[in-house]
Image (cartoon, rainbow, N blue to C red; front, side, top):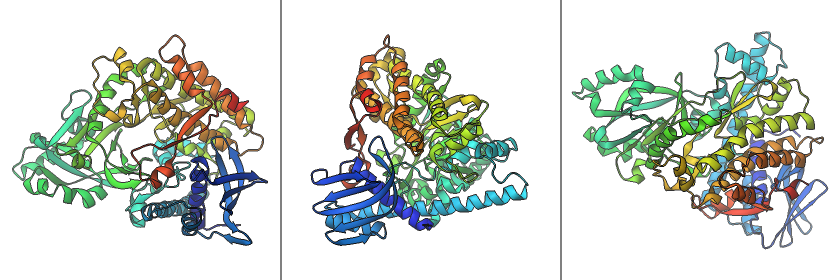
Length: 587
């Protein structure tokens, strides 16, 4: 049947909730899962939730289809919408969904609905433009993107940031944006591609702490925004103020209006924090609060007091210090692995006040990920999302672009190249430096070239996990301020790699390919397993710990819905599932 965009959005969130209940063993003592004849039955105290599925993947992941039915005795009721499902879970399955969580789930549904509508409109607009320009109506997405990039119309990374229409692949709160209105979502979410004018403010040096990768105090005015330098100078002189006494600070327009004018009211009145008449055009990247500065080779990570997925998006003051310091140290270390680089964070700044306020007035400048190579540079998360040009999933369009059919052989070859180029340096970082980069699909940028040529950049050092003892063997002078970056032991470092790379990258790619009947998922996990094994160097530190953790029979996964149900966003709750790259897992 044909679904409306609202129905598609509603079913998407419902299906994600059921997947979470299964994967996270929510109410595991009395809840039973039965799988048969392409249907799932979730049973609890004589009641059943029934839904069809079209694919069962590793890590207890199901591709669900159609409406959910609630059955009790002779009673059979089709669940009409998300609110109906939540009421049944609350009242009949003893799963307590708070009003706050209900609001978050509804916000996610609204986000999906708006994004699906935007996708449909974009699809129609592209079809119209192809017809007008007399280009082939069935043009391949990668060929189309390469063409418009060569014409100087767009930047392919920017395009890809707005094509991750499903967001986090399994989280029910994937598109939550509270307290944004629908109009705000359309203004500020990356899927809509809007120009977002960042507020350019100045903050007195007595009230700011800046950290520069190269000890360049005026990095913002000299390197990032040099064309604003004399305009700012003239503006401040008109108020009998001197630019040399101030630092530049960028503020998201929503944050300015809803947070800054109130929280920092006294500083504004006293002249320590000044709005200026200038704005800097930007576009939202996939992470929502990290903005691409239009026409400049930089991104800026900003605090926005909005719940995107599970957390309020702030920028802690220690993060603005560690980013430049780690960038300085890592630029030498990463030269050994040319297939994978790390986006530098050359400058950070925070308001010199109590931490609870400083995290709302801060920022990190990041070099825009750029790979000078013969191919298309895309955020990895877009690969498993449908595109609006040929209607295929982007990774399928890439294989078609290379003149391959979608079959076990072509997928095997793609995965071998992808895994080798990504996994080999990431394992080496753990063994050589004790660092696990948070290389999940949102943070990973890939250049896909001809003949399966691939290179990667990992962005956002704030999600890394570091074994300081190992790092100090190569960088003894380094000092890490942010305790959340420091692992208790190397096992925690390996867990970061396992979660972000094996669970997020490869399980998701393999889940996508597994929908094709001719594809054997176990064979794909075996490829990943063998490349992980080959990447571990027995002559380097932590080889035994890597093998013990990465090839264990079971692995821990984050219980994302349970964390929200129990209001433990900062405290991880995990559950154990079978490890798909354990030898027994793919036999």
